[in-house]
Length: 241
Image 1: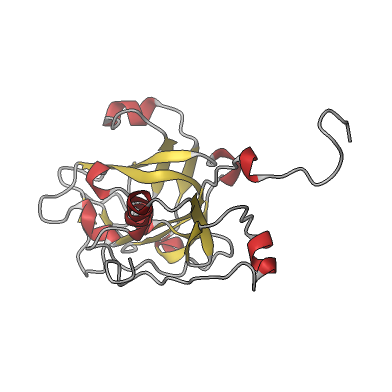
Image 2: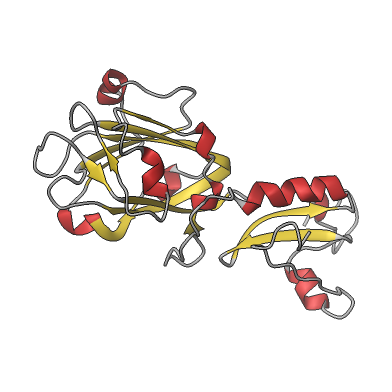
């Protein structure tokens, strides 16, 4: 596996020698495989099923052409770039020469609107995530100003629907925030997100087109608790505590 996935780091831990580590990670059977990215626990898998293991590694490994995710700067959260399912993303009113792929890459290119200043960006995630904040880099004059955020849409919204619908959050960006400053989101309302729709309603100076150089979405994967992983530590079945 290490030869197949050179950008991943593999560690083998003997739970007899490292019982504290096994206990802290909830390991109740061997082998157990635990997946991390940027100090954030993503997932775990029990059992010696080689095909299932490789499929899970590929799920978290990210696209071969993905830009390297940066340190989010937010303890307990990560840059969700590797979890974005690019083939499931879409952008309405994007320029043919400057499309949405540019804001997720390390290139110097950018996303720009086409016929007017509005954009709708639909971002699909490979697994459910919690959203904490955004980082946006854009020019002070043509960068976005008003953002309306929607989650878990079954289809890409059109502009009339985005304009009239009530978002989960509306954000008014300042020119200072377009320098990549942390833009906080309503974390309690964004706990189980499969996709995110961002409606860029206007820009800072009402220019004809809107430009975005970079977008980073910061959060963490949703961890599914399996009750079968827990063992009774006191009392007998049927007793109350």
